[in-house]
Length: 255
Image 1 (tube, rainbow, N blue to C red):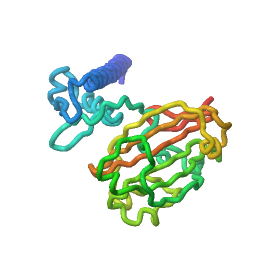
Image 2: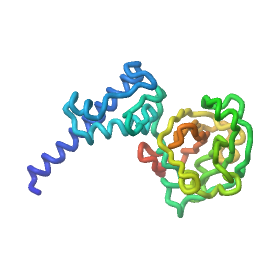
Image 3: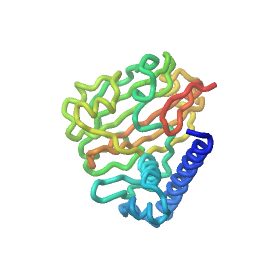
Image 4: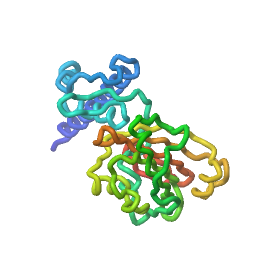
């Protein structure tokens, strides 16, 4: 490929990236402004392509970003349905900690084995009546990189047709891989809320940080391929040495 052709290809790639971002930002702004209320359907890919003279791949990239951030959900035969106005941040991928970190550097410290329990009072996300009635399965663990605790993770799973979960799931397993293998349950999207907080005593103990030192608190709601079943977690993250990545979800060592 000669220099002129290479330059032309690079310009096209940059223009495509800009176009996807502009479409993504416009659609998100319209969702937040109630142009498209929750439950409504966004214009089809064909309509978006025609209206803005965009390629199908550009439109799909913009819609994919909206889906990843929890604003829409794609349903075959219907299209892109608005499901949330949460201004979710995508600091962590929903592919899971185990999938994002080199397994030779990762370890899991047991805090609480899976057990059946009632939902905590003042739970961080609104639960459906079905979820409330079913109660939940709860476990807690600390995830470490090279022996250093970086994440204290509390997980809550509605007790809805997940037979033998408590007996089968081990804390050193990948949670998402376990769900896919044992129950054919896939994660399709995520909502999350993020704050900087002062580490309470139980977090300081598990992450080996000073009491009241700053940590990130992340509340998460995972959507699955079972419309009635969402998964929930509360994460406390120590970013003193390891910084949480962006949309790739990778955990990178701070310089």
